[in-house]
Length: 371
Image (tube, rainbow, N blue to C red; front, side):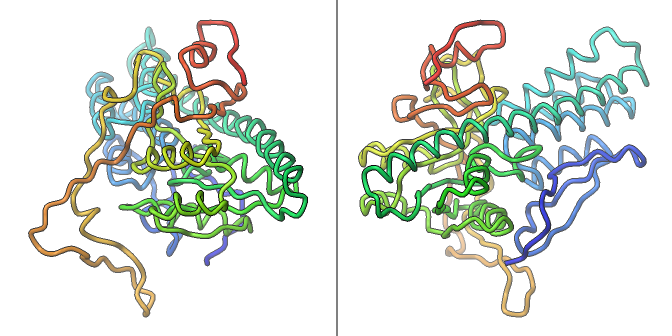
């Protein structure tokens, strides 16, 4: 597996060229290549084609895209609408655009507006990095507790087994990641752990991105097919499930990559904890319920029909795996009901997946439902 010095960054603003450099995640793990974004069009294309992905990183990229638009004289409303249409599910996209809209409100047109937008985009990036670092700390405390409990039950236990779905590391955020951040910190603190990595069809973010990240940090892991998780839980090979979120509703329902709901059901059937790691920016406080209410992105059928990989000559190729003319449907996300979630790991601690738990995290309210 290709190994690169860490930490890397998923997105970097280069002041000298007034541009943003991103990692083209569609080429990983076979090729580490950077792409330069210099316009609204570039930002939209990067989000739509999933060169950048992960709710926090999508929001940050959109923020820089709005800055480029204002710098280039494109009206705020048109630019914001264009960016908002690129990915309908992740709430960070709309949240980031709203932050920038408020930041530039009242500014003089032209360079002053653009300057304010750039400052806010950089601030969003810094805040996300700090939030993910804090998520890692709170999640580490949780994993440490689970490891102690396992050792009490079984003094001969050799490792804590964690199952994760999709990619939730630094590739999906400004730094650290969400659900992978606690794993990185636990590994650094010497907790013996092993990560079961779902392949996460159809785009295989687990197989191509999560394994690449974990391998680069020498975190023990095994790649598994998406349908193996329930079997491993039945066999006692999973101690905790830890996933991310693209949008969390006000009642604690969590929208995440397609297949997450099935993992939560299997975890509940096997009496296993199922935690979701997310920054508060991923919570949609205006959405009362997630199940049946969150718009689910339906992506191209080609993602289901075709797979991409490297052949024996090292060439990146795409091949079809289904018959010509075969219909396919490709929902990108599903919603896990709050009742199946053990807790939400945020930068402000571990909170209940409930209306009370979410309310305690609202920026305009006080109170606590911390677990």
